[in-house]
Structure formats: C-alpha cells, structure tokens
Length: 379
Ligand SMILES: Cc1ncc(COP(=O)(O)O)c(C=O)c1O
Image (cartoon, rainbow, N blue to C red; front, side, top):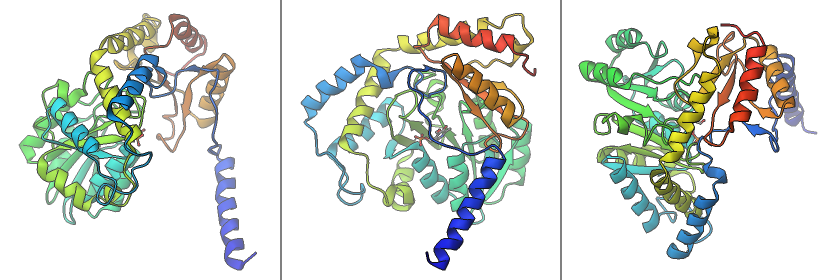
C-alpha cells in the first residue's frame, strides 16, 4: 500500500468512525414490505399501473429515440422531443421558457452557482434545501439567511443586501412541511427590487401545478423549479423563467453543460406523468383527504396545533437517539417513517418526517396516529 493510500484510508476511516460515534452513520436501507410514510411519491405515480400503460402506449407512438441521450444537450444529447417537452411545460405552467435538468439538485446547483456575480447577494430562507446552499457555495455572491418564513427578518436582509439581490425560498418546505407566504415575499422583493426564485420540488403536484402557478405568480417569479422525482414519481427537473434566463443557463450552468442529458425514456415519463396529473386531479383531492384524516386523529390533543396543512408532517422528537428509536419502533409495526437527524436539522429539532400519500389506507394512518398518541411527544 502506498503512503498516500494509507494516509487517505486512515482519514476516511477516522471520519466514518466519528460518524458512528455520533450516531450519524448512514447506510443504504431497503423498505420493501413496509407501509410507505416516508417517500415523496405523494400520489403513488411510481406504482400507478394506468400511468404505466399510458407510457407504454406513448412509447409506441413516439418510437424510442435511442436508449441513452449520448451526450450533453449542447453536443449530441438534444432532441426535438426534449425541446417540444420544454415548450409544452412552459406553456402549461404559464412561463416564458422551460429548461430541463437531470435532477432538482443539478438545477439548483447550476442556477445558484451561475446566476449571481461577485458583489451580488443571495438571500435564502434559513431552511432552504441543501442543493441551493451548494449552488451558492459554488458561486461568488454573498449569501444571507433570513429566519424561516419570517417576513420581518427577510426585510432586514433585503435592506442589508448589496449588488443585485436574489431571494430563494421553497414553496412547501421539505422538512418542516409548512408553506412560504409567497405573495408577501413577492411583495417585499418588488419593494426592494429583488428577484424571487422559488423551489417547488414538494408543492408541484401536491398543490395543483405548484403554488407559484396557483397563486398567479408565474410571470412575477424570476425562476421556478419543478421536480419530477416527487409527486410525479419519476426523475428530472425543469427551471421555468424568462427567455434570457434560459439562454443564460445553457451558457453558464455547469451542471447543465457538463452532464449527459436525460434519456428519451425519462423525457417520455415526464411528459406522460405531467399529462396524467392534470387528467387525474382526484388524486390530489384524495391526498388532501388523507392529510385531513391524519390531522383529525389529533383533534383535542395538544399535538393538534403543530399539524401542517400539507402531506409533510414533522413530529419533533429531540435527540438523534430518541428519534431513531421511534423510527425503529414504527418499523417493527410495519410502518416506514424516516427519522431526520441533526445536523440535517438543527440540534434539538430532530424529527420524524411523516409523508402522507393518496394511497395510505385509513387503517395505516390510524395505526401511525395511535403510536404517536400513545407515546408522549414533546409539544
Ligand atoms: C426542496 C428540494 N429541492 C430540490 C431537491 C432536489 O431534487 P431532486 O431529488 O430532483 O434532485 C429536493 C430533493 O429532496 C428538495 O427537497
């Protein structure tokens, strides 16, 4: 073994050991056979046979255009199908243009690293997703954080911003399950001449076509991210915005430029699942009903006031060990509920992240609620 390899192995194993000692060691897991209270497949699209059949039929209609994209969009990976899909999505979402990315992570990384220049400011909600943070870290602008969903705190940061100012929020927060006051945030951005960027990874498909669209803000928000790996049960993402942004990202978003494009099969999946979503709005209604049913289990308990309006319901159980224990107990009951540990969330804010789905049965939801009610939870 070379000296360099020995040294590297020593560092890697020491870091892993540290993780284990802190109870933070991650490993891959299989959840087969368990009731799903943790995936982002809110509407069950990843297991929807009717959608599967529609994709099969569309495949015959469009004829598979190769198995792989063969290169990045800028070289050999572009296709009429991809461009038509982008036009279709832009039109349907009331946006000027749409640009596909391989994932939401890649889209945020590309967008936030490229959009702001040295001397500019990106203000983000303190709970913004890691992909936005990584994008900001890769770029040269200053990042300021405002208190979660706190308009006063945002205004303070807007006053302190230098250069061109960009404000980044999620519409439905992935870990806290609450909704950003988008209209008010947009109002503040207008007041201070800032540009608003909204990550709709979790809201798209859960709340209609996403909250930006549903609130009539499509033309006001500078860039909107939709992802297809959550409510649409597939993979990939799209950034919606003005034409100049589209051209800018093609030229400067490194995650777009230096990566093989999505394969035809995935583009087909996106097209079919997008159409399926709008032909089957009853699935969104069913998801809302399941969320209400879950919430009704807690009426009259102190817990009632901590419940969120959407399908993501965080249950705070401070301490990594305590929350892991609760997750293990639920697993023994056949329920997959994921524990969210610090430092993914702040120490003391560890939680079970319950995700409700249109396909969760009343019995499954009752069983979960029963466990939560039987076990004293911090309020
Ligand atoms: C808010 C938010 N933005 C972006 C992403 C990344 O999207 P993707 O899974 O498509 O990479 C996620 C994924 O968890 C997310 O929760």
